[in-house]
Length: 391
Ligand code: GDP
Ligand code: MN
Image (cartoon, rainbow, N blue to C red; front, side):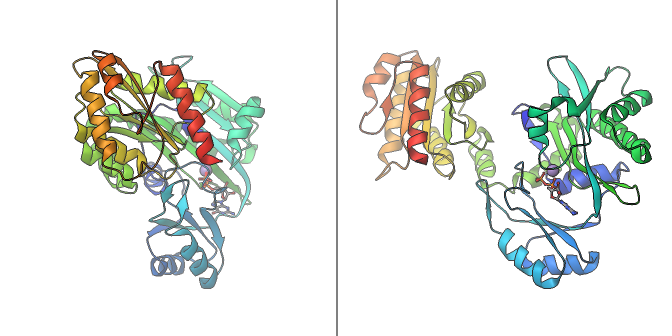
């Protein structure tokens, strides 16, 4: 459920979040990171079979997408490692896996802390319907997730932790431990400037132990200046995603999402609006990409390089508002950038507004791009192109 939080968060990998949780005293399985088959076999030998082999990529639903496998022997581990390392998981190449002591569980719980923007307060959540279907549970049976709002000036009181665990219907035998995990999670959420902290599943074993089998920790990016340890983990995490690395090199504000409409705009608000509109018209955004002020051909070329090298992208929409950056300059930049291609890989739609937009529209080469007058038309057109691209 972490996906609901805003775009300006830094997501730790599972193995990093687990390290943070374990350091704070939350029980986690024995594990080791590996990046090749030999590494997996070595780790498995240390830990002892059965082990879970888990792709370390920052996408939800790895289990369902084939990124997790339980194995019981060297032979199975080798096969799983060969399949998972290097695989494409929702557009991201798996470079590393976590090899982890398999947990024999009787139940999977969900525990999480996030910001409830509606209430303007953090909220602690617990469910006995944890595991890979929690998104569906949240949608179809929201009452199966117990919630407790927290007053940030007082923090989570012990009775609140017990109450939400009790409300969720957690088995008495583990209720105290689950409440303890939840309190620790809340403290981490606060002290690390988290936007989401989540354990799904928190596994319950036959002998009534609880173990964090998965871990999500997303950090408010604006707070990274005072979270040096987390920021360092983030640099390592970004290394896992080629596109995010590229964005750093180009100096773009970029967030990869998992849709098919590539979005390029100047100004964060403008890009966000475009994202919302793509969603409104039934498409799904592939990214947030703010090229910022100035729109020299080189910047446009780099922005196009970003979206074109994302395999999930089926169409691209430019939403440019001319201010100091003039529409005619942007148009020239777009033409120049696209003329460099023998064949433009994916259809591009452009909407220009603001300073010199009319000159810009005239300059744009309609052999290379589709020009639309309004943002609504441009977004709708890009969603149509994306649908055709998928078909
Ligand atoms: P996600 O799909 O990215 O959320 O990955 P998770 O780490 O939550 O794993 C998904 C599912 O795989 C869990 O809900 C479990 O059902 C299963 N799984 C993961 N680790 C283990 C393990 O150690 N033992 C067992 N039996 N199942 C596991
Ligand atoms: Mn999970």
